[in-house]
Structures are given as C-alpha cells and as structure tokens.
Image 1: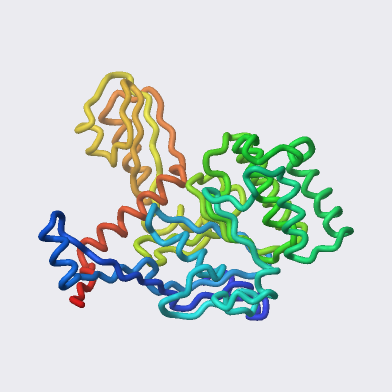
Image 2: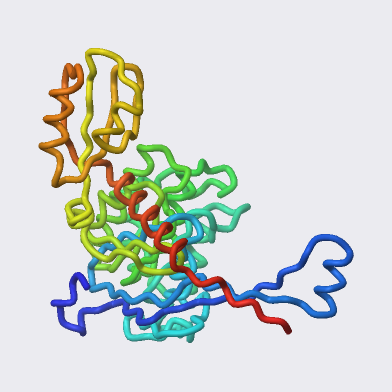
Length: 349
C-alpha cells in the first residue's frame, strides 16, 4: 500500500476490512405483491462497501474516486461516525468514529457539496458564531482564523447576507469556512465543488491546498471533476461496487502494464470507423479528425501502420485524459464482476 513506509504513528486514518451492508425489502407491484410482502416479506442484503483496506498519513491528500453508487459517500460517513460499519475496523486520529466523542469531533470535519450546515434565513456570520460556541473557539483564535480564510476565499461582503441570497459559489465558500473554523486535522470532502463554475472550482481548490499546507491536515476528497483530484492529490483510491480496485499514484495508474496511449490523427482523406478500428479503439471520428487509444507497448507499430496504410496529414501521440483512464478501469471491473459475481442473498423472514 502506498505510503506504508511511514511510521504507524503517522497514520491519521486506518480502515481494515471496512464493510457496510443494508437489508432492503423487496415487493412485487400491485395488490397481490403488497399482500405477499405483508404476509411473508422478502429481504435482500445489499453490500454498499465490501471490506476495504486503506490508510491516510498526516498531511496526505488522497482522491477517492468511483462511479455513482460505488460506496464513496457511505465510506466517508463511516469514517466520520455518521454510519456504523457492519464489519471491519476504522480508526481516525486514534478514535473509533462511531463513538462520536467530543475530542474526535473537534479534530475532523465532513463537507458534503450537496448538503448544507448554514442556517438558511440568517447571515452566514451567525452560523460561524454558532460553530464558534459549539467548538469552544476563543475570540482571538476565531478572529485569526477568519482573517486567514478571508485572504484566500475573499469572504468580505458576503458574510452579512442571508444565506438564501448567496450564489452557489458564495455559499460553498461559507460552507467550507464554517466547517474548518475549528481547524480540524482530518478533512472528508464529498464533492465540494459540485455545480460550481471553473473559476470558483479553482478558488476552492486553492483554499483546500492552502489549508493543507498551513495546518498539515489529512484530506480525503471525492469529486466527479478530475481537475480537483489532479490539482490536489498525488495518490488516489478507486472504489467500484463497494470494493477498492486501485490504490496508488496517478502516474502509476497511467503507466501500468495495461496503460494505453492516445493517437490523434488529422487525415488527408475520409475513412470509416471500421477502417480505423483495425489500428486501435476508436474514441472519436469527426470528419478528417480522429482519435484512437492503443496499448502503450504497441504505439510505435500502430503509428507506423497508420502512416503506411492511410492518408495521414498529421499524427500526435499523448497520454489519454485521466477521466478516460479511470473510466476504462471501471469498465474492466464491471466486466470482471459480471463474469464472477455472486447474487445478493435473498432471505425470507
């Protein structure tokens, strides 16, 4: 596991065999289905997280990636103590999250881009004062922290507005500031830039980067915007179907044995997708412009064949976008799951 050469005392988050399963009731449609469900309900066990192992070290920023429904938010909720694991163990800063001890809550935070903690009809500064009281932050520390946050987030002029009158970007800045007022040592960030424009995304990333540098906090970040991850995290965890399918750095993900390269073509004459498919996986074909992905080990041979057999005006070779690499990983895991997965257990009660 990456980073395990560091001493154990440097570990801020440790999950071992972490698992979360839910029992859901299934019912057929109509009156007969309702009657059967009432007399003899059928339940199904759904495993949202299926025994994952990972650790974060102090000051480390890790991207936590996966498709919708992969188990990312469920994992973060278990790490922050909002959900109790069905199995395995988890320790955060030496605490067991499910106990929700005051000493633990003072050292962590969970920010969810689609949830809010600010009081909707009050100015954001009032919510800040509430958090100051909850976390017993001294006036001197509160003012110092607000000055630091204002330098990066430019909070002046928006703290006195009612939260409901703030733009999405302004509200997200206030949400982050409110969540970090107590200077936590572990940050769980779940889609903190969702719905924001490019400029605001960069502002949020800069704030998280600055906070990590200044306070040495560990950060676990989920995001569907790969720019967030590539800008902040050198290491990523990829979860799919509740299982951890990759733990390593971005470079190794793009350069492993199964890595691929992108060949971009400017053609001198039209070709069909079927013709191009002889040389690699066609990812786009628009008039005389085309894009292929090919195994890294075969780039030279494929490029030479293209130049020999087709009317090629220009050819460039580059690494594929990280989104494409992650998407390929998801698809390969889905195929493996389809070929060897066991169906969920159905239990009659």
